[in-house]
Amino acid sequence: MVHPIPGSGIAQTYLIVDENDGMMVVDVGSVGAARAVEDFCVHTLMRSLQAIRIIAATHFHIDHIGGIAALLSKCSPKTVVLFHPLVKAYLKAHRPLSPMRNWVTGLFPTLIAGGFFGIRKWSDLAFDGPAGVPLPFFCDCQRVSYWGRIRYLEGNRLPRSRIGFGGWEVIAAPGHTEDSVVFYNEASGELITGDLILGRQDGRGYVNRFCWDEGQSQRTFSALAETLRVRIIFPGHGPVIWSAENAFQKVGGGGATGKAQCGRYCRRKAADENGQPVVRSRR
Ligand SMILES: [Zn+2]
Image (cartoon, rainbow, N blue to C red; front, side, top):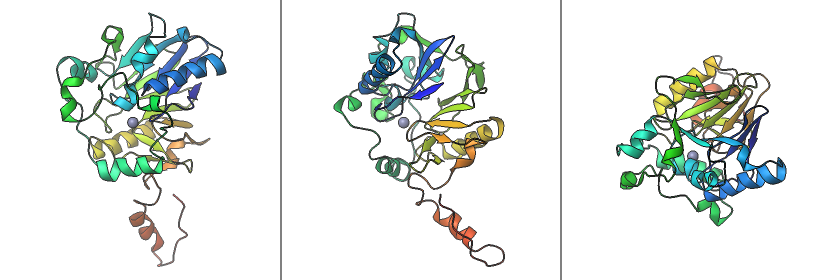
């Protein structure tokens, strides 16, 4: 079962509990997120952080990895950090992070619609270090203190493989960044999407326009929607997207606000074949 961690700050942190395999945490984006995980484990689940076996990231951006060291320092020495194989090249070979597009049309509307995401306290803006900032200036800053604890997903086992935790699988999902992955549980129909899909306040979702390759994001989204059976999408930012039949049906255009990119689509629908106006769907 996936628990969205309350008060996890900029990105949404998720804690997965498996009755046989303990706990796994996905996307610990700040020191504040690490504290929020501890709070939730100890006070809500009444469990020790020692039960966390894996800390994973959907992609190597600071708002999804910036609290891993803080959390790891309180976990068992056996806890491992799970990254995409490309992260090895970021950390060891100075490979630059994926250059990002649509800062103005993709990122800012999302920031504003989300009330500048979930920033509520200073620790939401405190990070382990500058690793994971997707700007060329930070290319030489891609270092983490816990490199000995990292287990890289094996390139030859992606695009889809089991991760050795309950029924969870990891699936390569390039688009937002080259190293993006999603985590999927077929039995429960749960999908953790990172920043490929974001959630809106109206319970729907949209494919993130702030990305490395927009066409690739769309292709990845279509491929996932065609092959997976998903009831609940847990996005990297915003509320969960839920549907008893198929949660992908609730993901479409409309961007962060549900209006900005809807215009063309709605106008096309509004003048249908018979020239009859069509009732505008609220998207
Ligand atoms: Zn993010």
